[in-house]
Length: 332
Image (cartoon, rainbow, N blue to C red; front, side, top):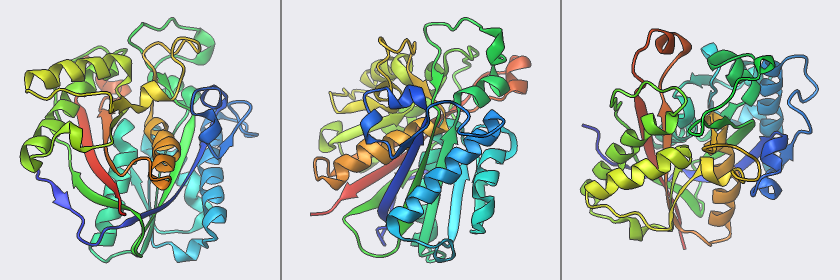
């Protein structure tokens, strides 16, 4: 059973940059994103190339923001939802930075930050970029139906976010740092409804949070924010109910990236947002901004992943979930 690990060297979360599509820019957090596109192609001939371009542009913005050259960065940890992580591969190909491709579904942003922090903690890197992206059209094509088909969505379905988020971790002292992490275990309750990913991920969140609170002896009240990414409204509600059976009552500081990114009613987004890019852009905009301003000082980020593939779904296998926890703290 995994245990809470503490970063003794306190890897600093130096910077973040985000790029989103049109729907995301029209949501409640639209004014916080660095870049947004007017359409889904970003000037590219295919949606997959468009997602790679989004990753490249977010990274380019990020490098310009911090006046960082690619040769100053030791490692990249990046991932997306597309087979063989080709989106991230092409997005970072020109940078020539040593690269690790990741896949952990919608928990990829959290996994990348944890692994980047571990690399710095082990003194194997001084500067690390982590990134995660998703695109509504590429995900629909791979996991569901062609866009042209116009399939109806169930109320529990989530809308894959078109977005890319990049982060810079550094070994130099800074105010915002990675404090602790807890690696999630694969949790499988036998869920098979691919249109209710929140339901398949909720038990994994509960497993991780119960383990964290039991081992740390902390409570939800000890944090400014406990944010999942991304259960959506359905999974968020289920996780609350399940946590209560363990005696853990979540308050108003318990939020979800998939709920925050859209105005679910006005934008008709059913159960909210999903995809690797969802938590990446919410963490890289709203949460990072709150930490920078000192409005939040202790945040628990639980990256959630629904670990199915088109093949396992067609073979009617269950949908396992995973939830990686990262504690991010701002020092006085």
